[in-house]
Image (cartoon, rainbow, N blue to C red; front, side, top):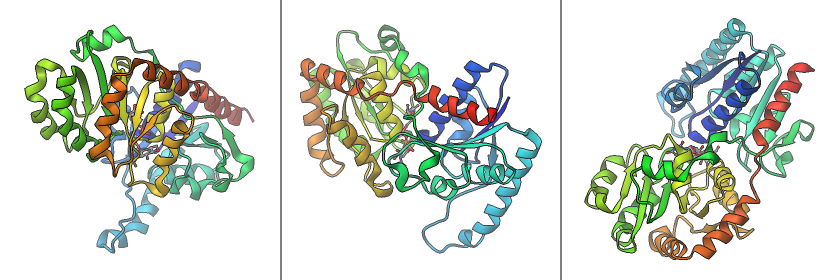
Length: 362
Ligand SMILES: CC(=O)N[C@H]1[C@@H](OP(=O)(O)OP(=O)(O)OC[C@H]2O[C@@H](n3ccc(=O)[nH]c3=O)[C@H](O)[C@@H]2O)O[C@H](CO)[C@@H](O)[C@@H]1O
């Protein structure tokens, strides 16, 4: 069997794609899987690291301002649809998956116009633009939230949850502590700003380093690429207290396994991973996303007493008060952990790949 998986841009699109590919490979070890991404974007490095081939298309979004680049936009779209068409004719996939992000548009367009079965995986409670535009053309749409009929034809919808890489929940704590050079006697705080890092979390964390050291809490702080050089200098004086900054964490399974408490943005995949790993968390939704969808992602947990919410606006003042209070309260960590675990959907990836295989069979 042959599959094309297309899309990317950020980890929230790339890692669900990897989870789907891993499940296809588990069932059909000789299946051929080709990823298609956008040149220059994160998928071009993260997908090969996960063990898959990827081809890049030259495609970017429309700029908000009127720029000469925008005038060329229709030309670029036309070229990328043609390039995707060529790829599909050469590779001849049995089915195509789109996970959102620029590259999935030309690939799904080219596949559906050739009658190839296609499936969209939408991670958020608010549908992405590419997915909305292509919904009528594809065969199935797997979603993670109720009420997605607002955006998609109801007869194509399947509520599966978000696909999470299976290893994410299998990290071993002792291995994790050794891997990240952490002290088994201390509590560990993990800070994740989403796949690109988050300025608000970085600034609040930098300011809180003395408080963490004083409380005897150790830190794994994922900063993203831009802030990393600054963060490295900021944590340098605290090396003996095990306060560590990291640009990007490849072994998220071990990062979760080491953590007692997690501070996180509320991207769809981060939230789904917190459910699966059963971590006590303080969520700070990004205010810079379409329709404030991260607040909705976070409220799905917070309304069930399964996570703590701090708004981006109040993070500078409140984030570390809340976090240090939670770190000092194991009973509350335990309650949050139990409640958040109840919201996990561990069968999401299998359900999506079931749908995909069914499409081919039909
Ligand atoms: C600013 C922005 O547009 N954010 C969107 C983006 O978030 P973003 O790309 O941040 O994605 P998520 O929070 O959904 O997922 C992050 C993924 O990256 C992985 N990871 C993260 C950090 C790291 O160091 N290593 C690592 O492997 C996580 O394990 C997870 O699998 O896509 C999500 C899913 O469509 C949306 O809900 C978010 O609103």
